[in-house]
Length: 576
Ligand SMILES: [Zn+2]
Image 1: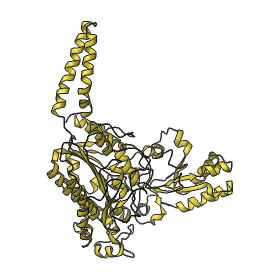
Image 2 (image 1 turned 30 degrees about the horizontal axis):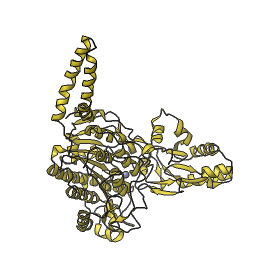
Image 3 (image 1 turned 120 degrees about the vertical axis):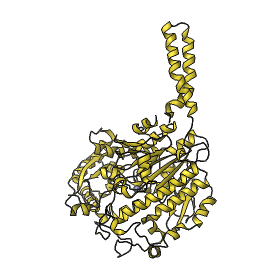
Image 4 (image 1 turned 180 degrees about the vertical axis):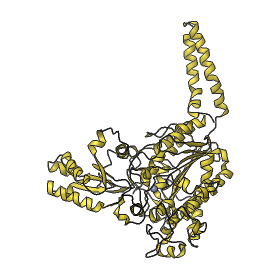
């Protein structure tokens, strides 16, 4: 395949070069005359090649596997099918040293970073729920009260991408290719909305109260007929009509702890975290929400993605479209059962089959060579700390409530006002700048003693202040990661970094989480396959914000407006 970024720009540039050379040729020496022909002979063959290869992928398929760690590619590989993840790993290119370059490694920031080509410092999605300093209340990352909901009760699910400060790959494709279509699908609203961007033709997510996919008036004037038909098929009821059993005999799950493990949460009140899971009774107890905690949530999303591709005619004409699919059940299962549970292993083995079905559909519909797929995750996850503790690794659980209480106590004792702290959330302290001013206190007078106090707290690795993050350039990777995740207008005044392997004690020693700048949360799979992509494995360091600049370069279009990443060299070079 050709290197389109250069090739497509040459035909436009070429006449300019010619006329410039011709106008000066008469007064120049013979050597300039020769140089002109050298220039012609260099450029012309490339220009001819451009017309031969002037094609685009019919469809770009972006796949995000929520909470997929890098090691899941290899831990379970010998039981992955040849037409699922192994197809991407063997026929595509795997960037093995791929990370999120920032903290906080959460779902909203992850999806936004993947599709905007930048980090929370620029795109502004600093957490899933973040403290809004202007309105002094919490803001959900895709909240928008101005829109109307289709498919669910009106007071819930009012969602749009309005909090996303920059545009996305899909937006750029629509700006560059007239007629390009962009559709995104996920269980989670934020995992559909942020990948879709501001100009998406549709973004659909699962409402677990109704058991249906929903959307809002931000995207469409009414729920499209095809989605009503899809919802009427009642897939969630079908998936929950039989128990969740392991795909293979239980004793063959050798990559995991025993099924009945003390490190796992239970899906049922008072129940054991063991197979088989009685989905009909779980449905009765907690509705369709329990479906999210099973691999069948991923099947539901794949079915919705295929229905969308079919109804919206994605990848049918020569104009490239984008289908963004985010599989969330891997995240729910990972949180509840941890990295070394049979439930997680089974979820990935089943996801692999789901992926194979999806690829087989796309092969038939669009043609194997006509679509470009990338697959990555929105963050990794920590191992269950209690398991590490039991095996001798010195990690722990931090008590955020008591940290916040003690900081309020300090503020009261020192400045006579615990209200100076507006919020402690997402590992950041937000102070009331106006109240400080009224009390005649300089912000820095507050920051210094609070930072000193927080540093003494059990489990804290380091703290950084607004001043540090605004003005310093850090040699250490971890501090740089905090900076890349810190938005000057939206973020707080002090950022706390916890020790590697520690998580909040709200997890009660069962299950696990993510959000840190440490490698287990940042290192994720990065696979490209299909149109314009070679094969192999590369170890050069790459980041989530490099994905869209890479795809943009393959398409020969500009990256989104806020992009700070770089195209991945091995992917682009393989393309030449
Ligand atoms: Zn996530």
